[in-house]
Image (cartoon, helix red, strand yellow):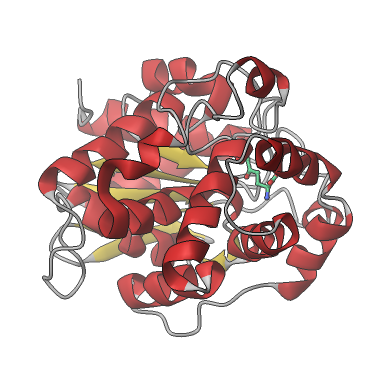
Length: 303
Ligand code: DON
């Protein structure tokens, strides 16, 4: 496959979508990002990486981090996480509170904010430094030691983080957090603030295309755990748009309000696309369009 030619064609096709949508204004530090940016990268399972546009520009990974945090917890802890968080699509916005009360403080899945807070809480218990463990993992798997937190973005989100605080305190009231709420929030906001480029994220997510095998050839996850993460990404990775994403793209994917999306073609490659303009459900408008074009052009999808 000539990835460069395919990505060039994808970039040309989605150019009219770039700049559409709204940047994530509820985190003021993200509102300053130029909505006209667009980049896409594909990392082949053999370690080669190809990109076009702003594919080497770091951006705020936000909820894309949730796929990696889940992988770290499953790798260390196995299936016991599923006693504390479900794995069904929520059909509700990523920051919704509504299901938690009816469902005893157990979030629907690990990718909505409530579920991600539980995963970060568990990672904190397992490592003593959830955000630090995640940063180390992302540096190692991307091969980029410069990957870092953006402390300004983390502080900006903390300052405007009442909704996440509400979710965390509510779950704590059901006994579903082991660490103090301020600790969990601090690690969660720093986890979300990590800055990476499309290149970094496509490489870091390669273990999901390699059925659980990491950059250095060591197994990070069992084949079945890798399959499970990809399955949850397919059903829950784009929140209340997961059905539409599966319909258009047909791949496991995980989006973030920084405008990034990773998508996995098991056995072939991992993609990352970035464009900051978001649709009403918090997914990158040009990013989804680009992945839609990519799978249409290549015929690659899980379906
Ligand atoms: O907690 C939040 O609201 C953000 N740090 C992350 C949300 C997010 O990226 C949702 N994704 N589309």
